[in-house]
Image (cartoon, rainbow, N blue to C red; front, top):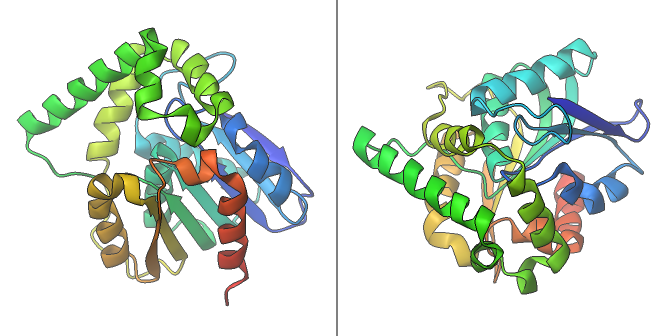
Length: 252
């Protein structure tokens, strides 16, 4: 896993964790803004590296790599962790481990374990795998899920290019892991202030995840954004994302 760092190392730390088939570079609007007041650390998840590409293993493994990187570089205290989609699932796992002191966290459309039966789980994984492989071959299918009018042509083009270089094993492992990653039973020691964000266009898919977060973590609240689809706030409207993030960061 690669890591990018921006801003002065003496300033409070923000970690930005990207989503599946999304380049870390799609965080650039947030990086350019946050780096003025924070030290920004951006992991490039397994299977998404620009060189020496690996295979995605699991949510837990990626969470542990990020935590170990932070500890090994003496970044034991973190101001905020912001995760998008798959990155949101990894953020949930990082928070649940409670190995880092994390003040705040934004989970944008993060996915929580589904607890499906084995048969339904396999059906879901291979259905999503098949759809993703088709979207990798036919860009018009990707644009059905991520409309350029909502996300911009640049964002959709970037995702399409990223998909071309992601292995089948990474695709299957991502879809399996986001549904089945393990979490502890007790979250009472997690002191992080958490905001779970999702859009009205994916309310049916994310309401379960939102309820899980707000009922499980002691200091979690959810916020719904009108007219937003999956990850659209971070990717399609970064100015609004930043406005809401700064508002949350300044809350006492």
